[in-house]
Image (cartoon, rainbow, N blue to C red; front, side, top):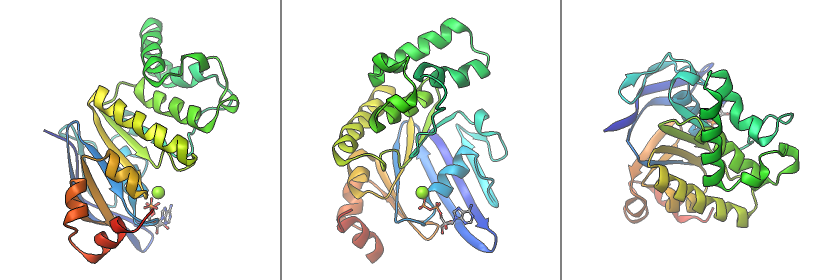
Length: 238
Ligand code: ADP
Ligand code: MG
């Protein structure tokens, strides 16, 4: 079944067409990586799916529902950014519960969800701390936790590991993979890092200039690139 459907989506910033009638069909439970060089439109596409940007043309469906003009909070998605975007004045627990309190969830349900997310992400000892007292890797776990507690069907990641050093990056990469195996939900993950794409993806969408050049399993992209750009981009070390 289709989880996220991007249908003929264009996005213009002024006179510049950043997404060019782009199509993407993501199957339920699939881990899709959007891979491409800086400026090719990866974040723009993710922000359109999330509802943080309005499309100029085309439609977006999530679980069969046309969400093109729905508020981000009503789309059933959770987003994790490169910059963590945690509230500095709140504890980790406060960061995790904030959106749930706003949504009017009962206290015991909030506590249950936080306990589960904290256990999965191994951040139980950090719950009373402020973000400033955490390492980059710990902050990114909390940012993932904030998406996790919302019990959403679709996770969107925008270069979540780019600010971390190589060791943490590979550690968290393994954890994100494990998280996906455990939850089984749909994940759309933006990166410009070929290794991340090859190790995480069920399918990779290689993007250039606001278009998907090839959408295929990592082995197929690597073994049968459709054009020189894909061959060069996948072949060259990140
Ligand atoms: P990526 O995430 O692949 O690096 P982006 O989606 O951020 O690329 O950007 C795609 C293109 O759109 C780039 O050329 C960028 O300069 C342009 N762009 C992004 N955001 C804006 C904006 N708010 N206003 C104008 N141009 C933008
Ligand atoms: Mg980007």
